[in-house]
Image (cartoon, rainbow over all chains, first blue to last red; front, side):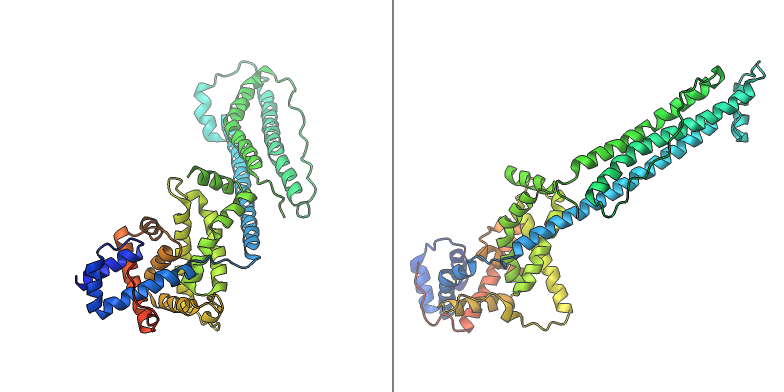
Length: 233
Length: 184
C-alpha cells in the first residue's frame, strides 16, 4: 500500500466508514511515520475532539425571546408599510377615476365649452326643433356635475370610512377624530327628457369607474382580512 | 416537507407561535455555525438574529420542494461571510479568543478542543464551513452542497483538504504523542 491509498482509507474512516484492508494498512503504517501520525491524530479527532465540538451551542437565556420579539415587531412594521402603500395607491386610483370620469363627461356633453368636441359632434347631432332646449341642457350639465360629485363622495365615504376606523383602532393617539364628509344634495329630482342622454352618460361613467371602485373596495377588504391579529403599537 | 410548508405559511401570516417554533427549531444550528465561523459569541448572537430576520423576510421566496434547513443554513453562511468581510475592514478592540465559547473547564479534552478550534481558524473560510457543517452539524455531502451552492465533488475535496490541515495542525502541536493509532 502507498501513501495515497492510505490517505483514501483515512478519509473513509473520517467519513464514518469502516476500514476493510487492515493488514495492508497496518504494514504501511508501520513503515510510514507521516501516515501513522495522521491516523493517530484522526483517532483523537474522531473519538475525543469531535464529540466535544458537537455539543450544541446555545445562545444566552434572553436571546430567543428577544429575537422573537424583534421578528414580530419587524413583521408589524412591514405590514403597516404595505398597508400605507396600498392606501396611497387606492387613493390615487380613486382620484384618477373621478378626474377621468369628469373629463369623459365633459367631452360627452353636447354644447360643452370644448370647441373641438363641439365641432366633431356637430354633424351627428340633429338640430332640436324645440328652442327651449338650450337652458334645459345647462341645468342638465349642472345636475350631471352634481351626480359625479355625489358618486365621488359616496366612493370616498365607502373607502375612507373603514380606513379611519381602522387607524383609530390601531393607534388612537396618532389619529384625530374622523372628519365629517360634506353632504351632497339628493340627485333624485326628475330629469326632463332632454337630459336623459346625460343621465345615460352619467351611468356609463359610473359603470366605467365601477371596476376601479370595486377594486379599491376589494383591496381594503383584503387588507382588513389580512391584518395580523396583533395590536399595533 | 408538508409540515415545513405549513409552518412557513403560518409564519407568513404573522403567527407568533409559528415564528417562535421556527426560531427554536433552528437556533442551535444557526447559532452553532455562527459561533464556529465567527469565533466570537457576541458577534454570533448578532449575526444569528440577523439571519432569522432575513429568513422571515425571505420566506416567500423559499422553494417548498426543498428542505428548509439547508436554505436557512445557506443564509447563515452568507451572513457570516458578510460579517467577516466587514470585520476585517473595521478596527476591533475586543480580544475575540477570550470571548469565544471555551471547552468544558477541567475536561481532559479541553486542550484538544482548543487546538481543533485554533486549527479551524487557520483554515480557508470555505474549508471551515464544510468542516463545521459535516463534523459538527452532521450534515451529509448533498446537503452541504445545497447550502454552499457547490457540486458535491467540490465539497468532498474541500472537506478532505480541511481534515488534512486539521490533522497536520494537531501533529505539529503534539496532540498525538499520548496515544498511538489502533485499528478500529
